Image 1: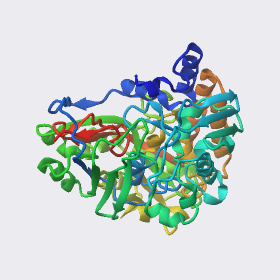
Image 2: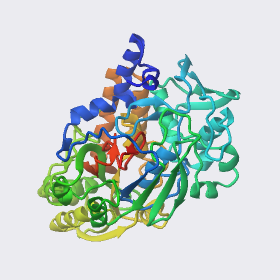
Image 3: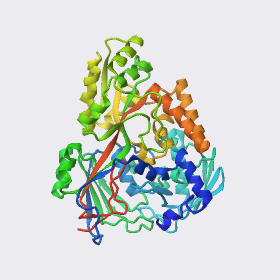
Image 4: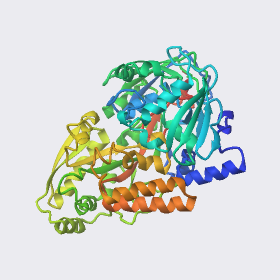
Length: 541
């Protein structure tokens, strides 16, 4: 265990260990390594992953990225898979989670967050920390970074993750005091979702900052082109715990799966994410390939403001109509697990839902009939991600087979979530990937992404005015305050309600295959989340 990690709150003494035990159930992201071990399903058969060579810091790292740039980089609003991965290298929080292990460590914080009371913490900044433009990081920057996320006017995606924070204030140039609305067990790991930005720059021109971000992380942003590449360079003044080990990085945005495979085979890049399942075996003889069972899922979301999708029986019918195991076998070559709960089996919060959508075409037809729905026609909107495009025709096939006339609509992510489509509740049914585990793997974060706040429940699937939604949010709040047993009981309520109501619910949780050249990269690890990380990774040749 690193010195930094060992010094984190809750690691050193018996009371802290008990606290970690509790937060494993109610929300500490540190429980993630246990989850991985329980999930298993991680296969690696390739050239040896051990690289004992010396890192050459004058070399650059090249990578093949699956997703294009669907948003900018401002960490208050960025939600695309690619900018989120980039931001792990550009920005820091006070506390960070290691991208591969999900273990927390102090980043901009000089020491562990100090618990003053159940509803008060203080954090001190590390000495000498500067932004990429050379200006020092101050407590006012930290206050601004949190306040702009909490400000309802900004409609920040991450506000629902820090709902327990009442106020943030600077007590001196390097110390910040947090006052909470309620006790929150996983305070230290959770504040990692807010990245610290320079107040003077971000507040002056947010659009410019979104396009050209400035953080404190080990790599500086150089440039980005939407469908081409992102370029980084080492931040030589970085003095934190995870310095850059390469001169720079170039991430090629290769949405085409064949192009990514060719890039890693030819040596143009040293690593690629999202290896096509058909290419896993053929790549294993040339580079390392590892598949990690993830929370990452394909979900169905319904426009609950539009008939007949406002009826749960219709939503249920469309789930029961799918032979998910056959879809997984055909489109993903077995690299996923059918959902029996909101959480995948092996997750610390997993409990089987009272409603499990096993394939039952007759039941699907009866549910539609009971709802008074016949001759249903719908448009299934999907993102244009390669593996989603493989799944979508199979969904159509099963729905067509029960008499539902299904039209497929495949769009880029930015177009899917635009006000003209899902963002404006102007759609029928959405099938899309999601993976909020990039922010942490605790139950509250994973649920909060879709079921807390307005972004999804109000603005994207229109379920926020229902009594069931109120029950879900009440149970989620109760879970963050209760004992381990109480939290488990509250999460079971949530799991059962969202499974039965299915306004947004997973079809399956998939495995994430990553490929890399271990002869050229040292200490690279495949991630159990979307994206790649080169934090602590160097090139040897």
